[in-house]
Image (cartoon, rainbow, N blue to C red; front, side):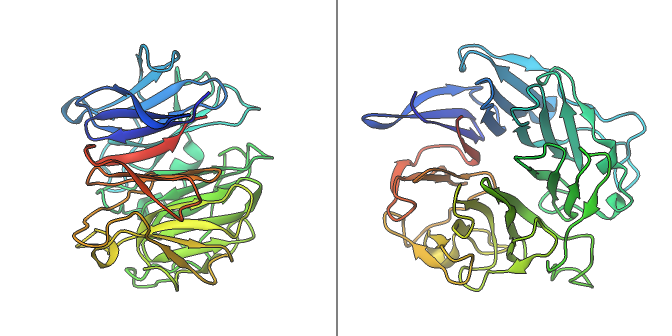
Length: 357
């Protein structure tokens, strides 16, 4: 079966497929509706899409026949007693992440949301419950939110050998770990820096943009943070900044499936500008754990470039890498990022890009 690529865009879900003749546009779904995240469940082939309907709120769609038909699944709801950090009632504002559980938990599905909610399903997404262990963490009232006004859970790392060992990234909240399936959580922020805080080394309030783990070496974690690029070789017990090479700011990071020292970033200009660094688009890569970096530019525009690549819009599968931007450009590389080809320049702004199962 060909490799698929799922793009959540401002105007719908766009699916590309790689065939012997190259990549081609396969199908488009939910046309006109913003799709914040889309993914294929590797356990059963189910397609999931989170829709940001604005006036009608957040919607969750599921397809069990590769997009031929879709059904709306009831979106998660916060309990009546749940309050945001500012004391207002908590309601679902945004779905950041849809994360299928491991093969050992065939019905498990996670959703990361605003305001700061991790929802869990054990019946294949028919129903969801709020992970109270994280929601009731005493630090939650200190989570302030980053680009959105409330904190969002955008990253979830599930240990491949222990499904009860979880790690989440919370915007302007930090990094939290659970070893008991979400019943209890502890911050894991030693070594991180939050230069926007009065105490840059405070335990709470850091702003991870994305956290990923090497699948075959899960103790090695990479983090693109608002304040730099960080790496941990001991499961998050301590982080080390490795952002001397690329610009410190960005959203996306991808790590090699086998080599934990090899990673890719798409650097950007921070805060008020938020576009490609130096007016040209590049991908930064390291093969030595961040000691040194190279810029990969072949096939990418080097002037008049205003692309920004969001946290979920870079992905890797073997030698194939792909990323898409807020200006609707989609680039693919078949040689670990050494050379890039423009696949489309007419997409709507892209919120997520994930390879299929």
